[in-house]
Image 1 (cartoon, rainbow, N blue to C red):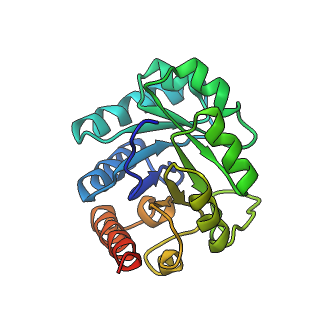
Image 2: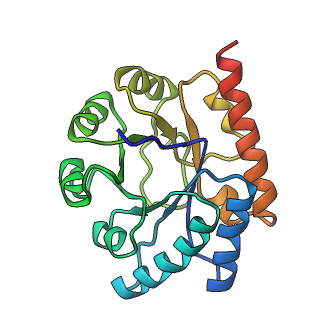
Length: 214
């Protein structure tokens, strides 16, 4: 298992951004405390995706933050990203692991305990569990109960990040779960001050984890 800090997991969304504002937002999030960044782009050509990945990687490398590529193992390999994240409709974890090798990070989406177990057995380093709330980034949202997240975390020995519609105003739902971190999109990508947003999200996530150990 490759160690990964999921405390504040930024998932990018270039919608409503120019390239300049997109890259600026990513950098501000890194300065503010993002511990891992996932580049997620569903449209455009492979060449465009690679060019964007290379530019984002310049930023994440500058701040020593792992860059994860959503779905596209070829893009992850081409830009030498830290790893890849695969969903339930993407290549299975076992194939991602085979293609990337043992030293890259492989994350997987899991909404149920059986899915979590399968991903772990196949070599996943962490799990993204959710959606905790309805989101604006996907057409169809399947909600996951906080209790399910905790059950998953107690079933597999790899870290779990909560995903889906989370922001500073509703993340207290994670207080009574075993989430290792929070994954956000709009809470940073649409923030007027992404650096401050990242700082607040990270600080509160750490506080929530500490409260669970009291």
